[in-house]
Amino acid sequence: MAKTIVIFPGGFHPFHAGHASLYQQAKENFPDATVLVCATNVQKDRPFPFKLKQKLAQLSGVPPKDFLEVSRQFSIEDPAVAKRIGDPNDAIVIYVRS
Image (cartoon, rainbow, N blue to C red; front, side, top):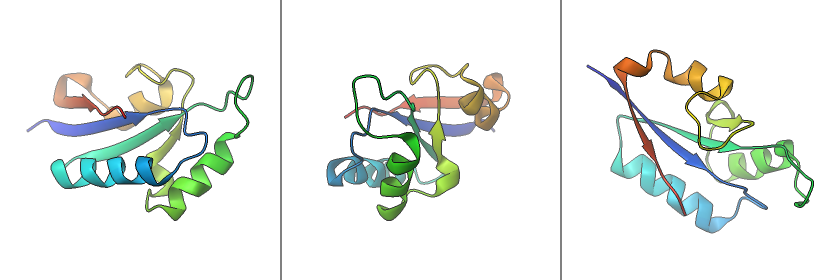
């Protein structure tokens, strides 16, 4: 049976209550899925570094292992995401957007 991966990409400047609510809804709507929150460390036009975004997400209930630093938020080919998906032929990938 294929595994289900829910990907919640975003800027998260900062990770706030609305993001936490959407994360929890994804967990509730897809209880057997792995929910991954994906963010970049780009600070050119935005102030928050990845580690701070990750810490704020942790405080909201996102496990550190499920808050991924990515270079491309909407790509299953990003190395951090691809590693968690494994075989793409044996996975159902769902994107969640706020």
